[in-house]
Image 1 (tube, rainbow, N blue to C red):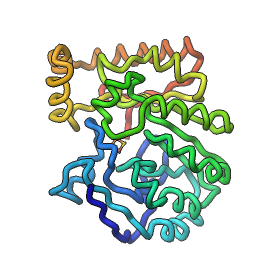
Image 2 (cartoon, rainbow, N blue to C red):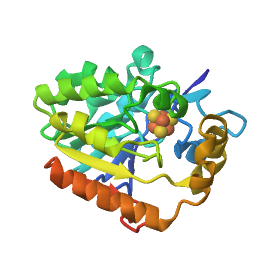
Image 3 (cartoon, rainbow, N blue to C red):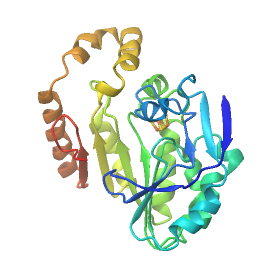
Image 4 (cartoon, rainbow, N blue to C red):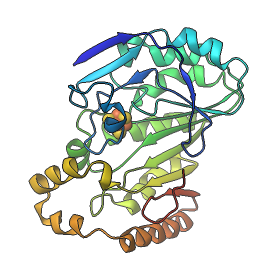
Length: 267
Ligand code: SF4
């Protein structure tokens, strides 16, 4: 693992990510190394000779920059769009914690992570007037999780984190994305996660960004799905949308769907 300590010129950037106005990327590169990660392409220009998951840029002056750049800002700020803000290295650098300490508390804070380390900062979240905290759950099957998200905390640890955050009274959501066709069991997720979230968000699998990586895994671990993955169509994703909406009604939970294939994701 190569860690590059660097200094950024600025840290707060406008973003087109749905539901957010600004993003802070104090880490770039992610130790979780998810097979389907789209951020690997965003980072490719920066570290051309590195493999995704083998490097992290740590912007060590982010806390100072964020204090200055956020002080007069309004709107929603999201932490890390090209990394997980609670990836393992956060235990050492505590950069997410320091960024939160210095961030303008009048801004709405939005965090999405795959790590239960998020619960370490509960006291800090309480200082914000408004915040929403999300955990990604692509599957509750630990064997499938290990294949697609090899170095991230277990689905169960994420579920426990959601329980804890909900118990503390936060607005919580589960991000089910990307949905892994024929592997993500949506009904099971609704059943087990619903009590601990206010909202579900869904994203489709965008193979145009990770085709090589996904097919390598599918051929090796799920050869029976290879043809199905080759034949994924818009109709498949329209059916998934219907399934999600029905489950949302059944479990009485609001859902937000961000599917590229059906046009419900607009940037
Ligand atoms: S946790 Fe997020 S940013 Fe990190 S590798 Fe996985 S998908 Fe990419």
